[in-house]
Image (cartoon, rainbow, N blue to C red):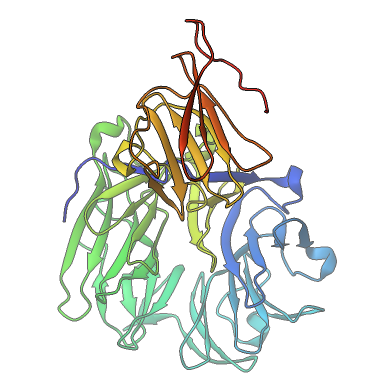
Length: 417
């Protein structure tokens, strides 16, 4: 795997941060989930849950029946209900009108719920401070607190792989399965190498990626093969950071394109060839607490921050065109749109046109390769532009005319005819 210096990712993306001043319930974001209706749900540790429709936030707090203001995880079940795991209030199911709350009185091993994982069989796996519980139709049908007398401790994440095996990221035993297999253990490792796993993700090849807690001088993940039991330590960034990595990598996920995403003082992604950093135009103090990344169904990217709210990133609406794409020059001087919706581009080296998301050269030969300083499209649809050669050029859709206007200072304004 190539681990060379990360290249910038989406340098021209559109960004929009959201905080409590925009209506978000809290600033410490723990989880993100887009429901089947398209709403984005945001779990916070300091204010409850927010539902976002793209414009407005609707907040659910203890006043609306949420059992605890610290929400760690969100899941959606086949019946359309949203489930919230809370840090002390147990498990809450929301049907859009009211909450049903489940606690240790209903069979949970702890009221501190860290992760919710809907499994393919329709059950809901609930990771808690003292193990996991399996919920089926609002009933706790099974509880697992350890293996062979050894407790799981905190269960930070759960994942069911393509083979049907459910894996857990546990505090005391590392990465283990519900059927008792151990894939990555803290035993025999120093604190600098591995303390516990924070988060799990599976890639298209069936490998399990582990975001670990550790203290070291580099940023790394673990890539595990459940079939063979082999474990590979994958470096994401090296000691050139100039500081200790004190909390490891907080989150890892894979997307539909097969990329692997990780968070540490920002976000980075492995695109199949190298790790690339995501350029985030936010204050660096927020980046130090990047908690997770999430991709919605429209392809937009969301980042959750511990203390900085959330940030929306549209990586696809802005595209950069350069000489490599056909522009005469990389210095663009003027733009105009014609009646057909084509964008005419004036540069220091001549004219070009943007048509169906590609740069095309002028429609005929003989166009001057000189600077276009000003440009307009008149009421008849003709394209006019002037440069520094004391000429005005006019394209009427069939032929190009050059009109001498005199003077050596060039043309700085082109009036309508």
